[in-house]
Image 1 (cartoon, rainbow, N blue to C red):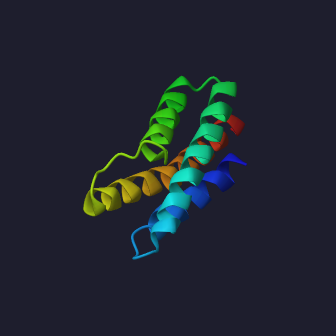
Image 2 (image 1 turned 90 degrees about the vertical axis):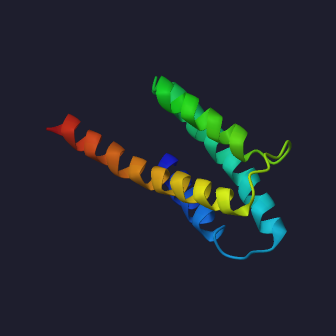
Image 3 (image 1 turned 45 degrees about the horizontal axis):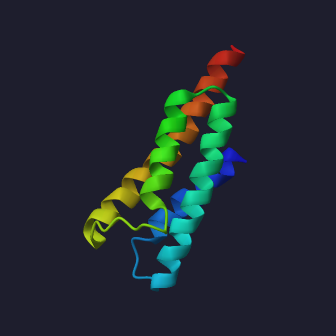
Length: 102
């Protein structure tokens, strides 16, 4: 489930680079809050404290209630960095799983 959440969030963040209706950005913020909260919970279950802190910080950054005004250009940079980070984390976790099997 964590892999699916990361992929869906990454796609959502990359779609934010395009000119979309404002409601789409609100939906992405809400989905990011829920997705990062789930990822934080799962990471806590696996005793990955660093990942928990990162996911909680991202949930706070993207939460839709008390918006952080960064401007369109800076949000685009954040979206790309977080989207790439999520995709890279998929490959890192896959690489770590392969090491543990060997």
